[in-house]
Image 1 (tube, helix red, strand yellow):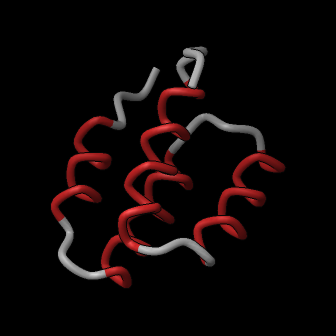
Image 2 (cartoon, rainbow, N blue to C red; image 1 turned 45 degrees about the vertical axis):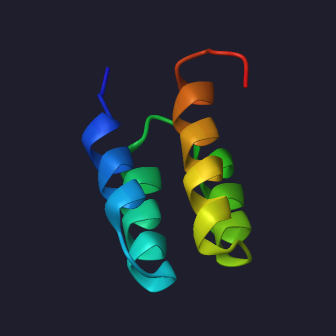
Length: 69
């Protein structure tokens, strides 16, 4: 099982939306999610602001661990 904590921390520390977006895409690609889940996530992150990206990606990582979000 991959530990995506480092990637998630990098997203939190990024200063602007474009940097966060690039890091989010990397995290999604590295995750164990199904292809359809990844494709949906790519579409959803495009329309989110910087703060919403942090929250969305936290939920994305936790849901991959089977945790209720």
